[in-house]
Every structure is written in C-alpha cells, then in structure tokens.
Length: 286
Image (cartoon, rainbow, N blue to C red; front, side):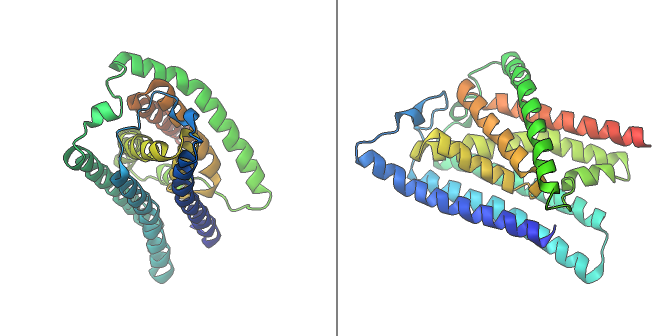
C-alpha cells in the first residue's frame, strides 16, 4: 500500500475516533438538558440491552480492527522493501491471517456477550425475527437497489479520484483473485468473501458496534461511525466511499427489518456476485 493512501486512512481513523469520543460526551449532555433525541430510538434494532461496559468493549474492538489491519500491511511493505519477497505469496498469507484474526475477534465477542453479559446473540441481533425463507427473500429484494447505488457511486468516485490520484488500483482481494495460480486459491478467496466476511463483519459492525453506538448516541451517528470504520478496515482508498455507502445501506436495512440475518444474506450475495463477475472476467481473458 502506498504511504499516501495509508496516511489518508490513518487521518480518517483519527477523525472518526475523535468524533466518537465527542459523541459519547455530547449525547448524554443533551439528554440531561431535557433534549432527548427520540428519533434515535426509531427502528426495529433494540439497543436498550447494551450497558456502559459494552462501550469499552466496542471501542477496544474498533481499535483492534483498525490497527490490527494496518499492522500486517506495514509489515508486508517492509518485508518487500527489504528482501523483495513474493508479493502474491505474502498477500495470500496476510489475507488468511486477517480472516483468522476476524474469526478470533468474532468468537471473543460472542463469548463476551453470552458469558459475561448473559445475553443471547440470537435474540440480541433479531436472528429469529424473520424466518429463513423470508430473510433471504427480503435480502434479495433489498440487494437490487443496493447494487445499483453502490456500483454507481464506485464509478463516480473512481473517476473523481483518477483526476488527482492516478495510482488507485483494485482491492487487494481482487488482485489476488485475478492472479491466483490455482483453483484452490480461488476457492479459498471465494469462501472467505462469501462465508466468513458476511457472518463475522455483520456480527461485529452492524450487530455490536452499531448497536452500542445507537444505545448511547442516536441511530444516524451510529450508522456514520460504524460505516466509516467498516470502510477503513478494508484498507483501500478507491473503495472507501462505495464501502461506506454499502455499510450505511446495511444499517438501514437492519433498522427496517430488525434482523441481522438479512444483512448477512445481502453481504454474502453482494460479495458472491462480485466474485462471480471476477471469475467471468478472468475466464474470458484466458
């Protein structure tokens, strides 16, 4: 990753961190001044079960996600500069390391929710609110406008950046998939994108971080902050605005349905369609 890109993402992270701290200070003050933001309670996502300790866990989780993603990237850049190692091999290893890291964080989070907070994640995230078939149907319907909007924004943002930031390339995952030397590597990348990422990222970002932020601020502030974090941890400047938009739409759908499984399905289908398009392109090129 270019140093300039890394610097921009670091700045966004710092600004988001400061905004979050200020938000946690301002919103309770507004409530004490008899200015409750009733609008923040609208929607089907029930955030009332979260307590003060969850704030510390959410902040710690966000810091681990952001800086846990930055560190391997800097290690990779340093290693390539020193010994000129294989970029493809190091990238695949880092991708797997990130996937394991996310799974580990998700497992810790679920353990905290069930053992220390004595909450049922199924109930907390509304996973039973809609049945299997209905959640899948709603996700499919909601995905259509989501794809149209996100890809249009991606096109506009890429064209905008190309005017003064010409070195913006595709995401690391895309490069790895295109340059994969075996079917096993492609299968691993697809499985990570379609199975691991939707479950882990929706649980962490929409399920927990968004819920805690909504509990102590309001839903719009929670959507903005959780979506910025979601965009930053993907470590790609060219995809930052499209990913932010995608995360915002996931939050909106989560609020409308109150069921996290809907956004998990949407996330899985969105990634699956993206990987299918890449597979088609690479097959056609050959």
